[in-house]
Structures are given as C-alpha cells and as structure tokens.
Image (tube, rainbow, N blue to C red):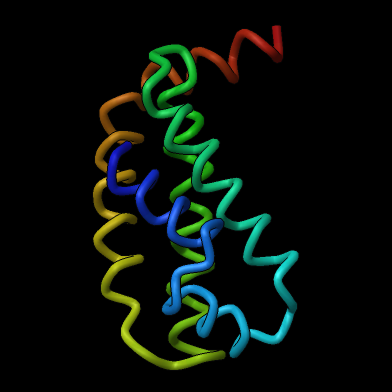
Length: 108
C-alpha cells in the first residue's frame, strides 16, 4: 500500500517524472490526476480487509496498462510498473478465494 500510495502521491503532486511521462502520453493533466487519484484510492483499498482483493485486482489492471504504455507508446523502462504489478498480483493471489466469494454472492 505504501508503494502504491507513493506512486499516486507523486503523480497527483506533480513530481517531474510523472508530469513528463503523462505529457508524452499526450492526454493532458486530467489523465495524470485521474491516474494518481485511482492509485491513491487503490492504496487505501489495500488497507481495508474487505476491499483488499478487489483493490489489488483493479491495480493489477492499472499496472498492465502502464506496462503496455511504456512498451508501445512512450518508451522508457516499465520496471516500476512491473514491480508494482508483481506486488499487487501477490495480494490478489492471496485473496483469490475471498474475491471469488464476492463475485459468487453477487450472482446468487
């Protein structure tokens, strides 16, 4: 949660690296703020036991998009997103039974 929170805080606060990266993407500051806000929300979700698995699942999707963006749009190293992907995927894997229970309850 701390690593995700740090990434989100840097993105929202306008640290030089995220600002430059999002400028290269070309979608404007609104996308940087949205991404940072989603990272911050995901970090908080990781701290709430009931939401932990779903927050991790959402963050896995975000890191996959970030890796794809690095590989196919802006270049640069996707390593930070890969590290965060591995960390959040481990959380999702550990919570997989609870996540499955949430989905089966909603369908019954």
